[in-house]
Image (cartoon, rainbow, N blue to C red; front, side, top):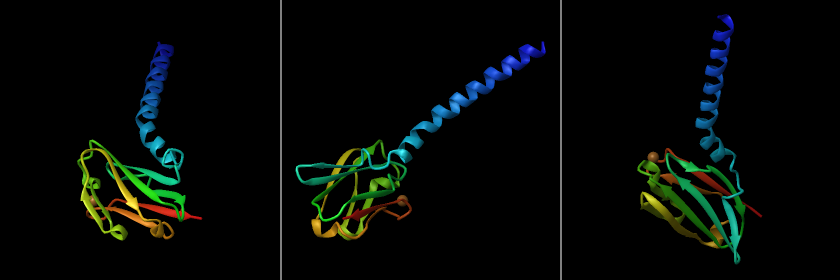
Length: 132
Ligand SMILES: [Cu+2]
């Protein structure tokens, strides 16, 4: 009897752990993603991919300084405030489509100091740091 209860408890706890691991995974991936799929270079231009949904991910990015740069802001069923995009240094303030990729040019002379991206109310942010 006791053995059965222990086995049942074991299964119950295992399932709980698996469920917890599965449900945590997407967020962890987002945070651990780092720069691997975020910054890429093509034909002398640097592309920075940022996901806008419930905030901006990643929220800290390191890119190369003094390079023609294009931001690619990706929305995926984004209906929250992060679709209202504000980039003060670019005088950019637009509503993004709920789903899609919006490309924004960053002039090379603005790729030296950190560039802040904010939602319309300023509660979500992401910062691109340019390192030479
Ligand atoms: Cu907001």
